[in-house]
Amino acid sequence: MRVWAAQQNRLESLDVLRGLAIFCMIFVDAVPDPDRAPSWMLHTPWQGISFADLAFPGFVFAMGAAMAVWLDRRSGRRQGAATGKIWCRTMALILLGLLYNSLPLFFQYLLFPETASLSLWEEFSQHGRWLGVLQRLALVYAAGMMLGGRLRSDFRILLAAFLLLAASSAGFHWYAPNHPFAMDHNISSAVDQVFPGTAHCYLGKTFDPEGLYGTIACTASVLFGMLAGRLLQEKSMGGVLSLAASSALLLAAGWSWSQLDMVSKPLWTAPYALYTSGVLMLLAALVQLLFLCVPRAASFVFHPMRVFGMNALFIYMATGVALSLLWLLPSSAEGQPFFSWLWSVSVGSMFSEADSIVCFALLWCVCWWPLMELLYRRRIFIKL
Image (tube, rainbow, N blue to C red; front, side, top):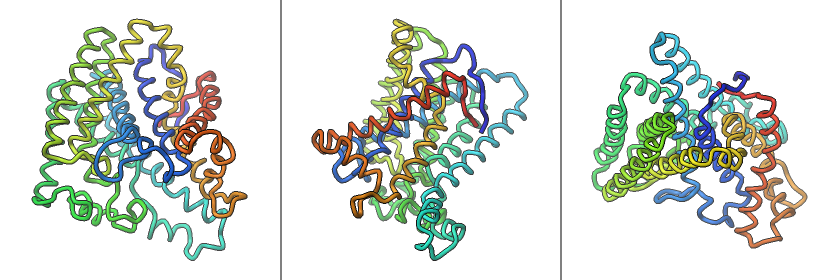
């Protein structure tokens, strides 16, 4: 990671979009009791879509928009150097993802060494999760940058995105024609059995929600974000109208495709990619419209999100480290993790269970704001 000073003339709407995405990711990760939380705060287990299912696609979409800005600013420069940076960042994200996934095991060994029957390395190599959010970001970043850097035109990028979705959908129907999206028999889980294998999937399941096959359709989500990034750079009402029209197109395509394929976040199916990208395209249009019409008010209202967006990767990892530790620490209540205990003794009895969980998750996010504000005011931005 590197610490950079802020660039001048940044695209504020893009920073806000990234901040909104990372804020939502932190918010839905901070559920203290999944059994009592409202359903919209939880990821759908297999089919359908909820508010929580927009968080990760939001970050993927914002990353695609930032990639468009990066590529446009470096157009005409030597390609070899840019390609080297892309692959270095990809490998760095993969390594960070492996480190991030090993944190629960590390804290387990640190706090409760007497429970260990294997060394930390043996435990991770035999049972650790090898894929995850950061690893998927790395793969779709590399694929998106390679495609975006070569396709150039908006039409080619849009066509590539739909071809990727078509390829992903065709794979499901080819592998299991009768029941292409069955939980126990689909092409995505079959790929996961080869790599990384059941022992290294999320919670030891037969599939991984960030598995390799879902990367195909997820790359399409990045390309849709890239198209949004190009429109955001126009900073015009024409760009806003184009974003809104693109949103309508993607939502209509998502509805049409959902008549054939299932909407599923764990599989990252084609209609899921289209629905989420359509919603995010509309959100981008609304944010950009506010910055065009009332720039000072928009900058003031969205300042907290901009602060989060300027250090998105750092805050994601920092909150993840904290959550890993707090879920492992014991509390005064027997059998209750410390993080869940914090909820019960703070706002757990002040409102209904569902409302108190929402309030607690919001408070968790707000508690990180002073640190992010300090980094922002010091002009410290930690990036790969």
